[in-house]
Image 1 (cartoon, rainbow, N blue to C red):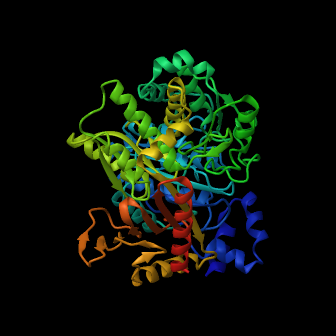
Image 2 (cartoon, rainbow, N blue to C red):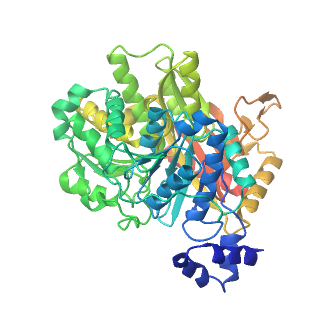
Image 3 (tube, rainbow, N blue to C red):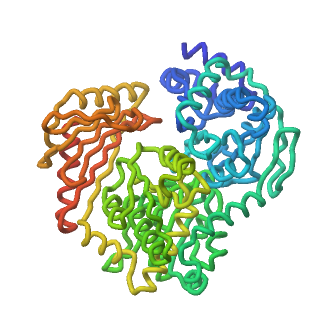
Length: 577
């Protein structure tokens, strides 16, 4: 079968693309890897290595997916076509080419396209969908994955990642027209950098500065200490790196408007499709922030901030009590932001009685305890920022709660409702502010985090992934999850299991056998609730053969918490083996 599809591609691609296919023609394993499967289009869109083939990201997989999206928008009627689709992209290989391809396909099918003139981050794409009242949005990105990857992320009309129901409709339209080489396009010239509100044809409008300024106006209103940043921002001891990504201009522009003057890692400021200064453009990792930390040591900085290529995730390193830089986890970053937001809102007399925090089920329960100490409600949702976006939409309609902050342990946060996905531009702004705020009160960020730990317990987390190789990887991972569900787990190491929550069956079974329903959507997740808000969670990745394991425990001191976390992680790995 792979041979037949391969020959179809040889005949269908452009002459300059054929060379890549000819080079793999005598490699059966490579042919199988590229042609045995198609890139799955799910609720997060699609993602894969860049290259020729049905299981790769290329112009043809992008065109095919976009035809499905165009037909979905056309199904909404003339109004849907007029409202159109926003298109943004990051600094990865072929991101601009793929974005232009999306616009060319939409145009050919009579759907308006609003195409950014140059790279923009995820939050600005989400914002623009709402700004234009668009029917959908497309962000070309593979987030913080290695340079070999790219992806196609789809947004719904509310600016959140597209919900399952409309996604299923897009998939249906893709399947109704499964060909790769019969997609219509209306070619457009790639000469529109720096332009704004300019039409390239009847359907494609280039957007830029006007949307940017509207975005900045929206997020600057979220500043909680504007007087402090105006007075002392120029003296801040902070380093920022965009890691060659789309965050450089929006983050530094926001800092400048607030009066914040950070040091910039110049070697990583400009876009680079190869991310040549790092192994992986993931600011969650120490190696990725190493140049920022080196500059921090050189300049005497207290904090290093880094954003990933599409600027939806924020990594942070701070100085500890010994003066050495340490990386904060996504959980710790989020807790510090919640602490700062609630502290300032209370001081300003702006803390609403119906305020709510939203986080994912695998995010630290320290956030729950902190928020509840202010009398606020905490909502736990499934992994995926679209579920946080759904809560914002729900409360806008009902007025039952006031959304204050949402975050997930994987370094994504959102303050404000201007966007419905993670926003590391706002995250960078808030973290810079909280650094200045606690410094003005004689504390470092590390000291403030330690105060929270001493108050609520020293939390330790261990997150890891088990990767399954090859085409059978997804099935092997599914078998592991099936075996886990069939096993009665009463303890994980020396930690008794209080309740087992299976989000696939949407049931929670307690130690005494009591069964209660789970009021969340179905998802392939097994969650072991331990005592006092501690947990172990196992879930497959939605886009790749990677089994994710989350451990969260706490103790009276850091060393004990670390030992407990290590023991618990070793125990769950043994259960899964």
